[in-house]
Length: 168
Length: 168
Image 1 (cartoon, rainbow over the protein chains, first blue to last red):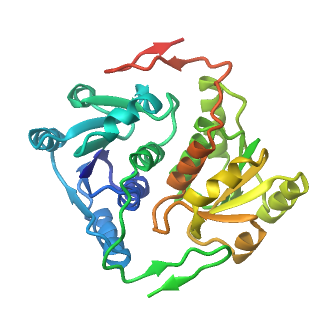
Image 2 (cartoon, rainbow over the protein chains, first blue to last red; image 1 turned 180 degrees about the vertical axis):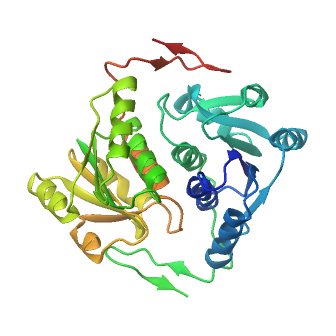
């Protein structure tokens, strides 16, 4: 099981980036995303809507305390990975992470509290360059390779060389 | 050489997503990003600032016409890849794309004109699910594996297990 923890969400300013984090999590094989920071029912609703239309049992939720979320999942024996530009290179670390069955992946915004670095079992960097939490999450999830079929979809794309093809 | 073409940028609404597109391009081995849509000096400036501080000769620019940009790079024999959820699976296509020395990768926003699908040499999907152009770009650039050192950086991160370490 892979659970994503998106910390420090800010209303309006982070709306699209945080939504992208949720959709990427779902598309690339995670099971759930939990947001902390400012409560934002809209992004949770929009992810639920997409999950209903496009399938899979992906879950999205909110918690007031990232500390409690991490504590809870550590108790459940999840291995906690924090994605940060200051961390160790993912190219070397991904093999070890792949072996863990239950993973929590933490992605932050601009200011991540020091305790997150401490609480994580691994601090991992997708390059030590400034870029995007959406991108870092995508690269790591893609490497973990846990993509699964999207069940109960109302709509499905038929891959095509040129143009748009659906199956309803 | 890898050139990214980000089409359909909208002021304010796309500011952060488009900036992330630029930073991801730079961090994961592209050489240049060209924006079309509404002219936005601010994102170009912020990418230039980061390039100055963090190194590399990455370029960012604007064009009024995506059609002209594609035409220009096709003339220069660039292989044009369009990332779209409707395209063919990247897992299968990436090998062929890897062999092309000069690549243009097109990423769009919500409404991509039909002619882009036609103009591209390949329409590629990073999953046929709705998620994020930032994520799709990151996954494909990572697979292409053209990351290079960041020259003339004013600042550099020393990867670390826990915490933040710099070299100036």
